[in-house]
Length: 522
Figure 1 (tube, rainbow, N blue to C red):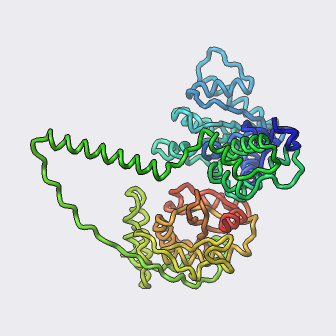
Figure 2 (figure 1 turned 90 degrees about the horizontal axis):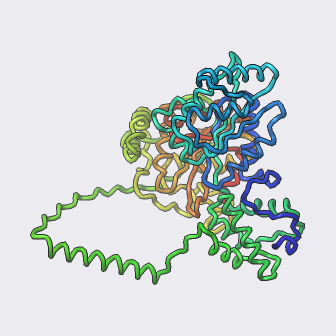
Figure 3 (figure 1 turned 135 degrees about the vertical axis):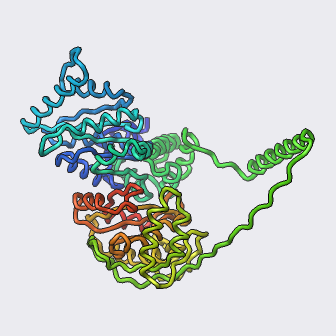
C-alpha cells in the first residue's frame, strides 16, 4: 500500500524469512560465518538459541543458501516427531525408501548411504528448527545419530535451532550425554539501539529506498523499547509505522507514528495509569478487608502470630578499584593472578548463591582466600552501594550524563578493578578477536561476578585475562564478565572446553571484541 509513497520495490519489513534481507549486524554475520566453519570442518552437533522472534529461522535459511555445493541439507521444520519418525524423515530426504524392515535395518541403510556420500566427498547436515519443542526421547535419538561417523570424521552434521527452553532441556541430568556432544553454542541476543537503527536503514535500502534516513531518533528509541530488540517485533512495528506515516501523507517516521504502531500491536501491554493503580490498589485493599472481616466473624479463635526473627543487617562499602595494568591479551594457565579477599567475604558471597552452585565455588574461593591475607573485598551479597560519580573506573572522557557513559559497578573490589582495566583495554583491542562470555549480572547480582573473579587463582587462571564491561538490557544497567582474548573462533571454542567447571556452569559462549566494545558504549 505504501510502496510508491516511499519509493520501495517491495515490503521491507516482512516477518517471513527473506534471505535477501539478512542483516549481518548485531553479531548475526559472525554467527553465520562460525556456523559455516563448524559445518564444513566436521564439528559435530551445533546449537543456536535465542528468544522468540530473534532471527533463528532467518539464520537457518541463509545458512542453507551459503553452504558449499557439496553439502546436502536436510531441514526438519516440524520438530514434533517421535524418535522413530525422525529416522524415517531423514531417510525420505536422502531418498532411502523404507520397506517393512525394522528400524535397526533402516539405520544400517542410512549409515551405508552416508558412507557412500562421504566417499564421494559429499557432506550431509541436518538442520532442526524449533528444536526446543522436540520430545526429549527424540533429542536422545539425535545423540545416537551423532554416533554415525568414520574413524576420521562425522557422517552427519547436526544443527539445533531453538528457544532458551532448549538450554533448559539440555541441562536436565539425563540429557548430559547429548549436551557433551555439542561442540559449538551460539546465542542470538536482542538487538541494541545502534543495531536497530542500522537494521531499519538496511532493510529500507534493501527494499529499494534511496532517500535520507527515514526513522527519527525518537522513533527508533520507541521501537527499541517496545520491541525489546527482537527482530520480529521490530519488523511489525516498523511496518505499522510506515503505514501510519502513509496515512498522514508524511515521508518521515516520527514518534507519533511509532506510538500508533505500538498501540496496534498484539504484544503491546499498556502501562496502568496512576489513577488506575490507585483504584486497583483500593479494590485489592477492600477485598482483603472484607475477607479478613469474614474470617474473624466465622473463626472461633485465631492462633497468635509468631514473632518475626530479628533481621541481620549487612552493609557493603564500595572500595576503590586497584590500579591494574591493562589486561594481557592472551590466555595462560598460570598462577600469577592476584586475588583480593578473605574467607569471610568469599563465604558470604558464595552463601548467597543457589544451593546447587554454591559448594563448588565456595570451596575454591576459600582455598584462594586462604593464600591471601590482603584486605577483604566488600560484601557484595548485600544491597549495592551507589558509586561516586568521580570514580576512577569511569570511562576516560565520560561522566554522568555524557553520551555513552557507563557507570562503574556499584560493588565488588575485584569487579571494579577489572572493570577499570577493561575500559582501557577495550580502546586498543582488536575487534576481530574473540573472548568467552561467562556471565551477565544485574547490579544486584554482582556477587556472582566477584566470586568468579576470586576463584581465579584457585582454578589457576590469570586474573588479568578477565574482562568486566557494562551493557544496557531493558534500560537497566548490567555488567558482563568475559575471559581471554583469542585470534580466531576455533581457538576460542577450544578454550571453552578447557575452562574449569565453575566457569562453564552458565553456558559460556563466544563474542567478538568489537561487539563487546559497541555494547560498552551504550
